[in-house]
Length: 340
Ligand code: PBG
View 1 (tube, rainbow, N blue to C red):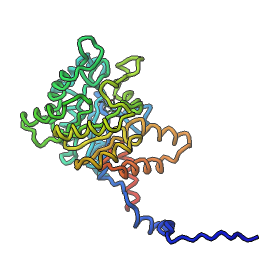
View 2: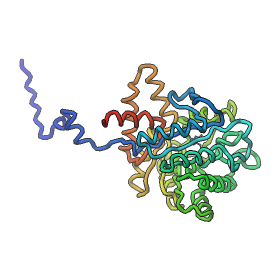
View 3: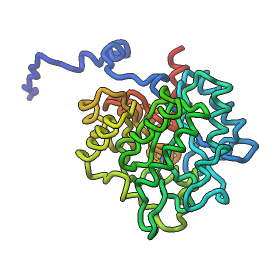
């Protein structure tokens, strides 16, 4: 017998999915080079870029190579970079004193880039973890059991001023200490840097997805075999309301932009925050999110380009205005080819 099922519907959403032209016309979200911020690593060594094993396609650059990379990114339409230093182990100590060295690698890197590419927005991370022998983001208390909030904030404010002096456009406290945005804002203003913006890592979770980054800058190595546990300052992955509180506090303390980190596993936080603040939102697609996609692709389990594009699109759709990502260069290259 013939089927008697009658599909009787007024709305057929598939009508607007029939061809590339229609799909492009109704597309709601797009990722463009303007949305992307490249995350880059710099080290003291000279010579060719050194591969980061857990992040295929990511390198530690010498100063000279870093500038070359920035020039290439800029040529692809990328407008901002976030630089992270891999500090030599012998320069690390318990207080992270190298962070306040006027000749620190990160400061030389900022100066070089701004000299060669004044238009490129340079974002400097404000936290002590690249510099401490224990790998924590701040100074430890007397008993060494926890990070001392207020003494850390003081060091961070000095660090931010040095970065602003070197030419950083945005300073980005990634440490999650209480009250640091206000102290940094005041310190910058007092030092004459009222135009230096603060991108606050406002909702930063104590995430397992930072693993490859810690390998890249050596903060995990600094901690030895013990897992680097930052749960007394980074947010509990279970807490959404607390994340919004963190972000709104940073806004009230003077942050110019707010960040949610990691990005992919925290799209609900981005989305909720989008509805509660008028500030620009930044999402950080972290090292583990990148490594996951790369690893699966290397195994032939995912299509690298499709997974990359979709991961970035989803972050924008959830409410991010811009995305810090290790895919920045590859994505910008793909956009360029597609656009032409
Ligand atoms: C720490 C910092 C971390 C990242 C950026 N800044 C990791 C951490 O908290 O240990 C992680 C970025 C990434 O995983 O890509 N100040």
